Image: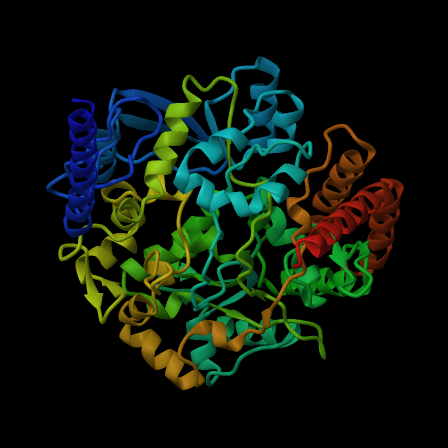
Length: 579
C-alpha cells in the first residue's frame, strides 16, 4: 500500500511537470500570452487578453485613478478626447492631468513651497528645492520593484543618489537615456541657427565665425526687408525667464565648449571659471551692440514672452538666433506644416577663429542624475503610479505612443526599420494635431525608451534613419545635396563629454553660499547684457567695467569652488566604475 502511494505521488508530480512544460511551450508559440505579469502593483492576476485595436496588454488593476502633474514649461494640455490618451486610460485606469506653467517659474515654485500644496508629479521644477523642503518621495525601492523601471534606471542609481543626499534617488530622468545610441541626424541642443534661405542665397556657404554669420544675415536682410509681408528680423534673442540662456550662454560656445551652463571647464585640469567676463564675451556683446545699431536686432526682443518669440519664428521672418532646437521647434514645425522649408533652420559651426566648434554632443547613454520627473509626498498612490510607468516602458506601449498603429500610422522597412505614413508625419509636424491626436504629451513627460533596441530597431521616429530620409522634403533633399551632406549634423563636430558633464545639472544646496553666488551671477548678467547691447557705443567699455566689477562683487568663487568639488567627486566615482 505504501508502495502504491509512492507511485501515485510520483505520477502526480510527473503530470504536473508535464503540464507546466506544455503551458510554457504554448506561451512561447502564442505571443498573446505573457508569462510575466504586466502589473506588479496588486495581487490580482495579470490580464492577458490583448486590446484588439492596439494589440496592447492591459494592466491587471484598472481601477480609475487620476494624478495631477505640473510641468515647468508653458504649453497646453491635450484635448480631453485625445484618442491615444483615452485608450491608455482604458487599458490602465490611469489619467494624468497636465498643468503647464503660466507666468514665472521661480514664482510658481515659491508659491508651491510656501503653501506645502505640491502637485503629485512634477517635471523640470527645481528638484533640489523640493528635496530640501522634504517634499519628494525616495524612489529607489520602487525602481527595484518593477522590472522595466529596474532595467531602465538601475545602472544609474549611484549617480541619481549622488545628486541629492547620496542615499536615495528622487528623480526619474526622462530624456536622453539611450542604451544603444541612434545616429545623430541633427543638432537637438544649443547653437547658432540660420535660415536655409540665407545659406542658399549666399551660394551654400557655411559661416564659421560670428562676423561671417552676421554678414550673411545682413546681406540677405538688405535684399529682403520683408518676408511674406512681415518685416524681416535679422537676429532674435529670447530673454524670457529661465530660457534666457539664449542671451547669456553664446560666449561659452564661441570658446569651443559644450553646454555646461554658467561656467566653462578646462578639460585638462577640470577646473571651472567664468566665461561671462572673458574677452570673448566682451567682444560678442559689442558685436550685438553693433548689430542693434544696424537694426539687425530689435529692442522688443528683450521683452518678448516665449509664446511671442515662437510666433515670430513661425512667421518665417527671423533669419537667425542662438537657441536650443527643442526650445524653438514648435515655431519651426509651423513652417514645416505650411511647406515653407526654406524658412526652417540649420545649426552652423560658429566659434572663435581657430577654435573647433563643440555644439554636437556624442550620445553618452548616461543621465544628469538630477533632472526629470519627481513624485511628491502628496501623491495619493506612488505604487500605482510606478506600476503605470513600468507598464509604459513595455516595448509595445512605447511603439504605440511613438509610432502609432502598424499599417495605419507606420510601416516596416526591411527587417527592423520603420517609417511613418505620410498622414502620420503630417500630424507629427502639426503642433496642435500632435498634441490632440497622438500620445506625444504623455510620452514626453514619462519614462521613455530612446535610441535603438537590442535588435537594431529604432525606439521612435527621431531615432530612425529610414524615417529621417523619408521625412525630408524635396527642398531639404536638394539643400543638403548642394552642401555635400546627407543630414545637417555632418557640418558640426561631434564632441565626447567627460563623465561629470554637465555642470548645469549639479544640485546646489538651497541657501548655501554657492547657491547665492550663482543666483547673483545670473541676476547681474540679466541686468547688464541688454544694457550693453543697447548702450551708446561710446559708453560700452565703461559699462562693461561696471558689469565685471559687479560680477566679482557677487563672490562667484563660492559657486566655482562648489562646482570644482562636485566635478572631482563625479570624476572619482566614474573612475571607480571604469568609465
